[in-house]
Image 1 (spheres, rainbow over the protein chains, first blue to last red):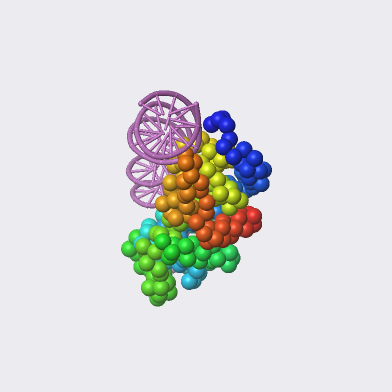
Image 2: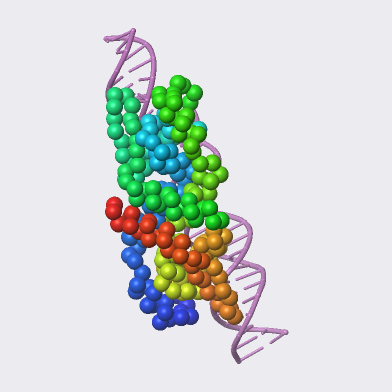
Length: 112
Length: 112
DNA sequence: CTCTCATTTGAATAATTGTTCATATATTTA
DNA sequence: TAAATATATGAACAATTATTCAAATGAGAG
């Protein structure tokens, strides 16, 4: 790991220009949220309409518990917001940013 | 999992409009690639310059082996391309799409 | 041809993570 | 108040995955 650098000046220059580890970590975290089939399904469904947990369970063919766990993760990541009405909790996307990220991922997936 | 639907007609309508499981899976796969600190570091470094394995190891403070493993994943996902010159293999980003995705992730991370 | 160097590869390990199951909470209804 | 329903939660389990280490390629230099 500490051998001589092949392109010392270039490598050092790039290293200086790197974003902070913290920021790069946070960026990776954002993508990690999108990197799961169930969550991507939830996001796309919520792009179409505000929905409650059992709707999402039906739409994605998963259990209510699994959906609830994933919604918690999406909420913590500030990608979805919740609205409670009686026993039912309605979820929706937090902002258009989420849709934008989804669409670019979709474009790229389409290119494969 | 098979109880009555709360919003039957809405849920069925959304389910009909869902993208195919295969496509949604592929979209999640794309994001999964970006969802790792080491790979995000590699991507950002390659955004700044074409670099070889040991450059990347130095820049990201990882072992050459770890970088090589991750580069294989990035190459399989068609996010980077390789050019060999003697003993050295130079890596670079495959297209601007990668940068676009990175930048949107960065914007979102910034908002947290 | 042998030595060195850059990279790759495979197996092993450790850590993370998504789902399930059982149970808990909260709210409505009888 | 008790029963029913929608959602949430915690622990356990299985599966995935990133890194490390040792060894193998592959290419240039002596």
